[in-house]
Amino acid sequence: MSVHTMARSLFQEAVGYIREQTQCHPAVGIILGSGLSSLASDVRQAVIIPYASIPHFAASTVQGHTGQLVLGELEGRSVVVMQGRLHYYEGYTMQQVTFPVRVIHLLGAANLIVTNASGGLNSQWHPGDLMLISDHLNLVGMMGSNPLIGPNDEGFGPRFPDMSQAYDPGLREIARQVAAAKGLPLREGVYVCLAGPSFETPAEVRFLRAIGADAVGMSTAPEVTVARHMGMRVLGVAGISNVHADDRSSPRQTTHQEVLEASKVIAPRLGALVRGVLERL
Image (cartoon, rainbow, N blue to C red; front, side, top):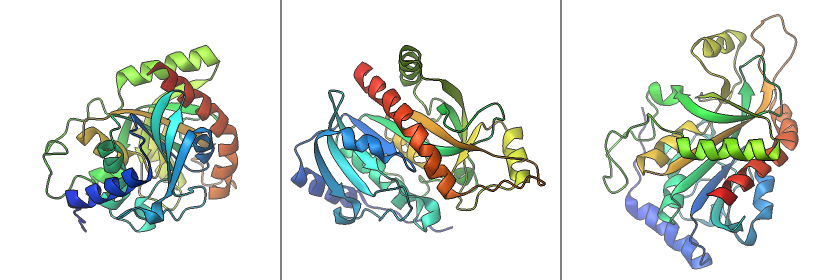
């Protein structure tokens, strides 16, 4: 097991660089998943900073992840938006994957909205659905790749953070109210995080359903773990890009292009939900 511990000074260098570029002091951080970057274009008075220019940020290498921070105002709230995220399967350590979350918090954000494109495991759901994440199964972390492994910085949070309310009940209630007011269908369920990058076999789909998962993806749980370690309130929303088959005889194949195509339907729905939540915060 490889542990890449990152000193607080590295986070401070990244924060210092960002503050040299903008006077924005964000109250809310937003992480946009695969194909969901369009919301960032609505940020007003935006300052755009490529990840590559920020000290100690890793590069985003996946199609559908632009790889830049966007700071400004959205629905009257000061925000910092990750237009694309980092993934464990890209070869980064969990500390590198979650580095931006700590930076977002140090910039001043107390709230984090995490989005992703996920595979549906609930057979009653459809591509294009939004799922409010009520809880997660961090199988990657449970198998030894938790981003909190290594020396603990008490200045960030406790050695053993509580995860019983990983997704803030108050923020989830706001999301439900927004969805009802805007007529947005909103599912609710459990998200399971796998390492990727291969998609799931039919046997794995059956297993994930059996342990109570409604959607599966390759991100989110590490970011949420680190956010909760620092005491941030978290709202998670998954866009269902496809529904997985659990039958080996099915000729249907899952592709990343399918995920990106479904995101064209998901993105406007997600944007309306996030905007509504920001209005009510």
